[in-house]
Image (tube, rainbow, N blue to C red; front, side):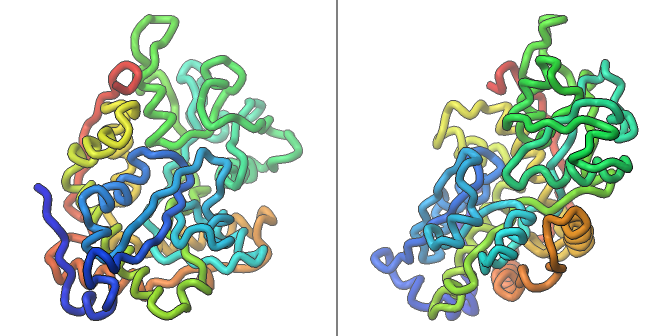
Length: 362
């Protein structure tokens, strides 16, 4: 059931003039790291259901197809907010980006290595002497770390051969890869809507083996909201950020409790997305967000430390980044306002659904 978010008196005082009237909506841009899909459902729903407008914001959502990096766009001042993976933010900051993570939306990694069950790759030990795909542009670090767990490294090819793959799993199905990098909510879900040429039937989950980065100690934090420190320091922008976070988190809470309606909204934006694929994706994305014991957007400290140690070990980072690149004060104000409105910000009672992907994700 649609529930328009009414801000508490405390938040209304914080956002001040941003909530005055329609003519005073503060224009801001949000740069995504991929195209419209359930990975970003909370942002689209906050826009389509009027949560951003209620917060005094006119939000323009900008897409990418992997070639536009949100960290670069926000650092250049071409968007006020961005959604990206945390290693990319940390690396950008070591190059002078001055970005800050103000909400760690995904609590867990969505990265898996996918292989055909017939290859017998059931653990990372089975990757030895295999050809494994990885994604470039800052998406590769979890796969790189996995090679070190095997006692190898990403360059030598001593234990396995790493090759750059496109942002899909075609090379896996074509036999060019023994295992390929995928996101559990996207390209793995797409496989389940494809036909196995050997049987003429849709692939089933039993046809594939997955290596989950969360289970082998190489997981890294992914989707989070970034802003530029210099922008945030300007008068009134911290209030805008709080308003943006409150509306965004409301969107994600809505998608937890009304997953089917969020899929409907996404399909109205782009009917070509495919209903069952978006249902799969919405369910899997919710698994990455909920439960959030400290509240949606709070940092997963253990995973942050694990990621930071891996990035330093691999030479991707020179310095430790456990505190400098994340702040939770704005998030906490947003969470407090939502709790005051009676919203559940932890999702402790949420349980995933059982989703079947239809042919072509339709």
